[in-house]
Length: 345
Image (tube, rainbow, N blue to C red; front, side):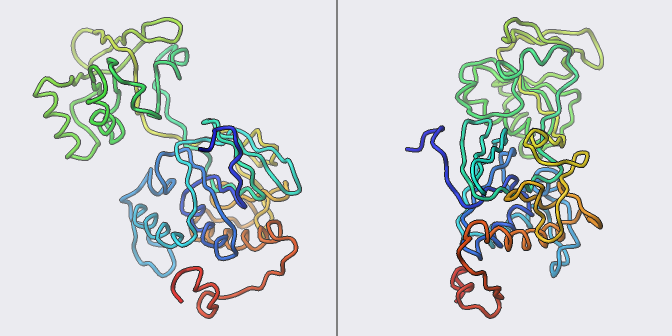
């Protein structure tokens, strides 16, 4: 069994599992490069999957209409022959150059990777949870206030206050209900933005007395040494009240931040990464940036631009991974060796 400190070795490490990162797997796979991908989200698809899974996209070449979720599914089907490995719910904390090129990459979950090539395909940066406007909440974060669920067992037999009215709040209310001692769902109003089926299941549990639904907003937390014991709540109408709890899960949505990228020693232009237009390489040889996170003269923030960038990136990456091999450009329409890799020959 692989320990958390034993390096995971791969040809290419892609940071970001959105459309550009996924298509990069295809282009790299055609050239026999193995890929691992890391994403801070708990699902594949990046902004497409998280921010607009049902929103229509009209500018993917050859596809008149597709949703964000549909595009993600199609890209996953396209790269299936190359067997990429995904590491979800993890954020890259450091990228260290240890060879020429060779990089050691560490995540906030203790994983260590060694890759010849690093491709940053992180969209506008990493998705970070929106912190609710509760004074002093920072003192409880990571100990009794959590913005994501890493392990459900951590909440066993606890009085759990879940705050929010979207899909994440309702999904975790239903998933954690069998584990927690008691689940209290708090939302500012008695209307929800979540899937109707989830809302109906939640209301059924409330009707059966199996959980609680409260209305209002958290104004402060009580506790010490990072351990919450209660939340003070202000409703729209009536007097403030108190909810006793052992842990709080606020789901107020996500925001985009550059995150730790700023500390990786890569040249930045504001919150973007300058690259050349021959291979979309950064100022650090062997580190590439594709998609919305990069900048160059004439840059357009379109998915199709990121696909183009991924194709050129793979051509340059090949020479780092296979310095002694000659790269022969081939077309998938006519190359039997490429078709064999795709399983269509």
